[in-house]
Length: 336
Ligand SMILES: Cc1cc2nc3c(=O)[nH]c(=O)nc-3n(C[C@H](O)[C@H](O)[C@H](O)COP(=O)(O)OP(=O)(O)OC[C@H]3O[C@@H](n4cnc5c(N)ncnc54)[C@H](O)[C@@H]3O)c2cc1C
Image (tube, rainbow, N blue to C red; front, side, top):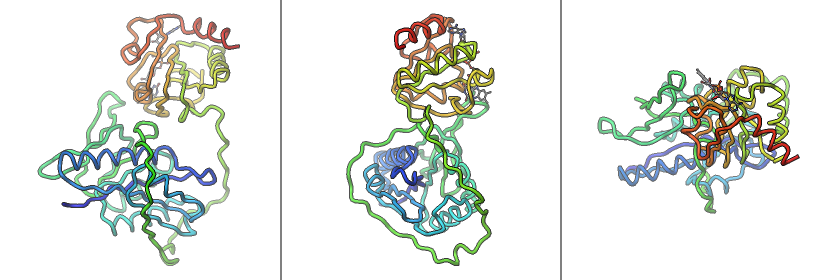
């Protein structure tokens, strides 16, 4: 039986001893593809995590427990800080050496920079911001079918890459991690000598560390999202207050952001963040497709809207046809 590889390019949070959630979600998706390949096409795929690091505290047990059968560990002092030129050169080297079928990146700031660098050097295609991946048979070959929104989110396009490796970036919060099953990690070290890094690369002039966010919508279990239906900044302040009182995060639609009711960093949707909380409460949100794309994997959706025909009512578990501002006031009274 043929043995093919799926690479997952990992992102490690230095100093916090954890991987970014998207890394574990990509491993979960890679494991699903492996299972589909075996069940439907009798093909054996190997899920491989790629770690690029200077060797400070890479934790391999997490990767193997979440599905990585093999870990390629590229350790070098030049990797201590993310540097797209060094990282992409090393990844291209590894890909040329191991010839994987599929390479997955997180659609994060780093992944969105690194993936195009790598794919342009390899002269292969890249499907960005995918919301679904599956294997399909096409002209006698098994290909990665990568689905992503297109035409401003009105349509979904499924794209097959003509060349290998087939590469994709995937948003954080869209895919599920596998259950953690402790496994002994199998690590293969990939070494580079210093001449490998004799290339021009950007110099880092200053490092500014990101402050821990008070309102972290990416990992929140409960999100209160305000739309243009909240009408004023004052009402948005009430939403923020309720979120703080109840230990939730608050988010906003683009409609609310464009109306200066909330900052862009809390925008949820196609051009904002993708979230998958346990509970999502929409206050005065119409439910445009661009918004739904960013929150459709929420477990339970509660929508409050005055309009019985609001599209959000088709995408929710509980609907409340009411004035969202009045509901907000009542909840604030209850929790204050
Ligand atoms: C390329 C592109 C990308 C986009 N990306 C995003 C994105 O990332 N995120 C996003 O959200 N949007 C995005 N949009 C915009 C999106 O199409 C919608 O315009 C936007 O989501 C609407 O925001 P809204 O629901 O707050 O406002 P509206 O559409 O104006 O809806 C307000 C809702 O509030 C209800 N309402 C009014 N008063 C009350 C009240 N007192 N109580 C209860 N309900 C009330 C109304 O019935 C209505 O349903 C994008 C658009 C494009 C073209």
